[in-house]
Length: 478
Image (tube, rainbow, N blue to C red; front, side, top):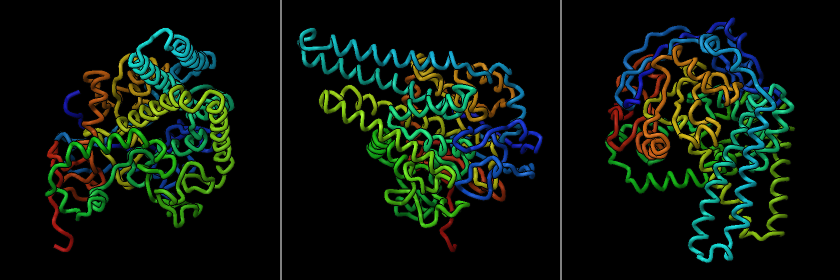
């Protein structure tokens, strides 16, 4: 893709279009495609709260400039047009086909372990250095296969694995628990992410800092950001390494990168709570403001799944030794977490992508603020296309991954220039994009000189002299 694509004006959808959307955010239901912004609560997720009879009116926006310097337009299509463009058979889910992928991925994990455990031994390979390299390859391969399992559980969380909610939830609970993921807890918060993608007040995943937040983090005033020198590449590298090593667990334990507006929770669960360690916002406490009162049992079930998995791992450590289990399970597990964070980061962080204030956001705009990438054979086969068909997934998350390529092609004519994909250099380009995103995308702010509703459409900016420069603003009080 060229240096970014422009994007443009969203007609909001009417009540009849909402009828095309079904589902609920309760644990027994899945996030479908809501239409309007849920105004009552930053943590609200039920579709009843999402249904507003008044769609966002058409507005006239001034000039909008993305990070590449391209002019941007707000999307002008509807969710009904998206759904109507997708062939009906793409919505069909097959238990047999879905479980065949589970069986395949488990077979890959088991076969790889069998080969390495029986043949990568001192008797067969006397060189210790060679064995270390080969066992490193083992951890990498198992990490890919484990990520495939993670993606299948993700399918379960969206109801894309099976038409049966019971099949989805039981399967997802077992698969995610085996990877130390709190299935229901993740499912619920992830549903909220889908219902508020790109919304600066309510998004739950990789929500960027505003200019003011970035300035506070650096101990500066907002107007000073345009005057700062470049962030050192080593600082960027340290940030990326930390993100990839501990980002997933930091998210589960502290809600890092999620919104921090918990005081607005409609049930009052967020009073006095904030993101961060000991802030009361995490994926394991039934009282967390990430959830509603009705979700408490689901969080407990998730915790039980984690406790069972940890118990089994402790037993295996005692039976086979912690050092063996470190190589057999924990290093591959770290690879899984790395891929999960990298994939999610690059799905929602790119110099071409906008974010919106709550007043200017709607579902169509938010779902279009995502990007597809390319990871070759690994992405399309081992990771089940989660990298290559993410835009479609944000519009209709219940479409199974094996139909997502066809559905993606079907919605491209509807989205037109608003569809974004960066497939340059394939897998190598994907890895390079991590560095690019970290260097180009440091905070979001309105286009310089924006007024009225135009101020509600935000774009990434940085202090590294890359792309569109930060706006020059006067100090407060001047």
